[in-house]
Length: 274
Ligand SMILES: NC(=O)c1ccc[n+]([C@@H]2O[C@H](COP(=O)([O-])OP(=O)(O)OC[C@H]3O[C@@H](n4cnc5c(N)ncnc54)[C@H](O)[C@@H]3O)[C@@H](O)[C@H]2O)c1
Image (cartoon, rainbow, N blue to C red):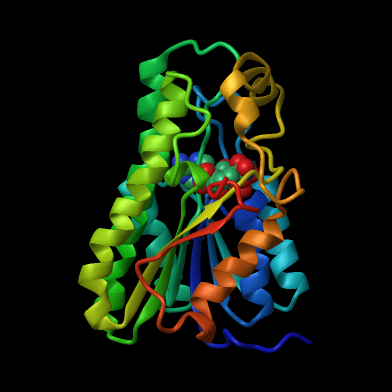
């Protein structure tokens, strides 16, 4: 039995149907947090791989319950303020105001041949930046009003700290711009939230072999983009595992992170230090 370090806490996690988001849901639940899992569970036309499905979200529910956790799963799009508001309402009804937010939902449109650079740029910004803003904008005021502190983690990327791999495409530029933009959201909100005992930080993962990167179009992008070959880690590990990112989330949201706010935490096997 894991130590129930997050017993009594409520965690709101976006993009939780699979990949890193599912890992965060299971690991937080394992430590006693009750989980609100939000995911779009449908495709976005410009994204060159399938996004999560309802059955992926059902699998997250099953895995959280298998570790003894409580979870409410909601289908919704972080680009839509009404969807985010409905999920927050469900969370408050079921469990109360979130103590923890993990804004993790994201897309990456890099591919071999880009059909429309402007669509790729704008769609990426809408999910990865506006979606993160919609999430924290809906929840942070409730945390402030409740006046019991909290911890918000925004999932950025090594591309939130470096432009490495940039090739002039709308997808690469949009991804790097959105992931840098998340840092701006974090730094601005940190000033506002700190007096209320609410912490906010970003995590910057290097490559993780999830559905976002393990598809043929991403491999075509690597093959056609020499800059992509500079995207190796310093440590001799080709990729990280979702659990590596979940451990960083835990570090920030548990007692270990109680005096940590406003930081950009790379979990990147030395990628950005090279
Ligand atoms: N995989 C990597 O190499 C890597 C590296 C650095 C950062 N990241 C970031 O990690 C986060 C998680 O990605 P992942 O690797 O688990 O990929 P993933 O594609 O498996 O997971 C992303 C999840 O977000 C959901 N989602 C996408 N758009 C959404 C929307 N509009 N509304 C609600 N949900 C939406 C998807 O359905 C999916 O379940 C993303 O923010 C990603 O940019 C990934």
